[in-house]
Length: 204
Image (cartoon, rainbow, N blue to C red; front, top):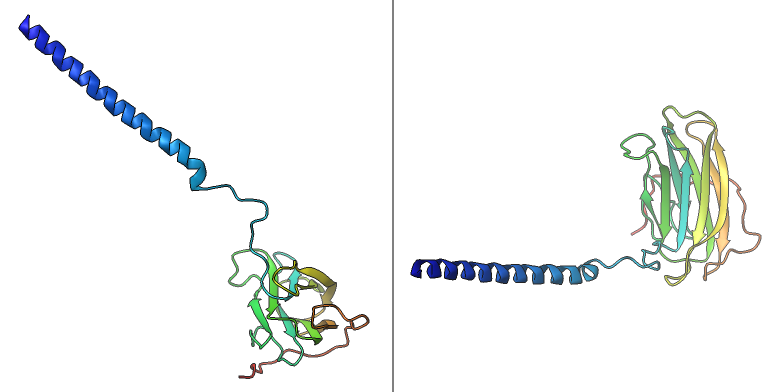
């Protein structure tokens, strides 16, 4: 009888220990479930990174087209900016797309951003540096957007589409003037050719 009482006592102690462990585990799981929504809150609709730069110039040409098209831009009083001179006082070329060479995507795209919006004339050119296998003429889409201040959204002001007929060809897409607050000067837009391709470096 004493032996049976001893066995019953041991079994009761084990049951209490298991209950304590189970309750502690259940409490831990409950805390984790309560904290999960706060660890990684869902993104809200207004989150996002605003586009950098004030004057944004973009070009694109057909996907998979194995051709190296270059964007050249010139701000008022500054040197031309393109593949051989990626930065001036105002503009910077952020992407030099070589077509199918050293490219992990099929997108053909180049973009330049300005720092500030100096008043005066801007020039935007495209140049077919090398054509490996793309059919000619090669269509190139060109657009210009302006964001006068960080608090404002970028607004597209100019778009066009050019056809590059042969390797080495450089075409002027736009010449236009902006006011100091980023407004397009009425009647200032034209495409009178102006060569920009150069190796001249920015001053200073």
